[in-house]
Length: 116
Image (cartoon, rainbow, N blue to C red; front, top):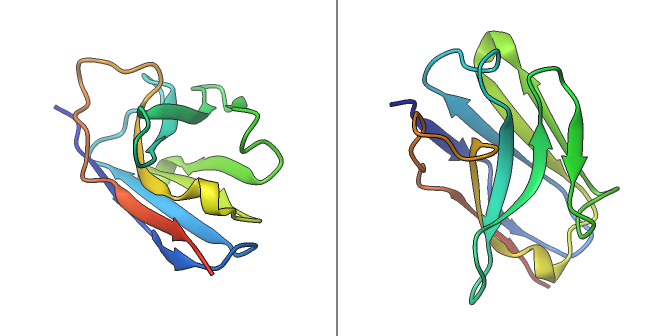
């Protein structure tokens, strides 16, 4: 099983920024496309950003233009740069394969709270 460890969350004011990190236990970016998911209170866990093995990215409309997914293959790390944060971005953020696969298990996630 491939393990995932998210970090970088915290409490920020609306309009603020955070950069989330996801450290993957083994080198997998040549095998799996990766994504960031989030689970807001009362909502389903949703995929919000993806990066393919070839480096192409995609985003849901709600974060497009504000969030950027990237990776550092040498560090086995996927990042999510989040700018212009809004209260509705409040959620627990997770990384995983996109789509989900049998090799990776959910990590603990990292809490992002956007509030004034």
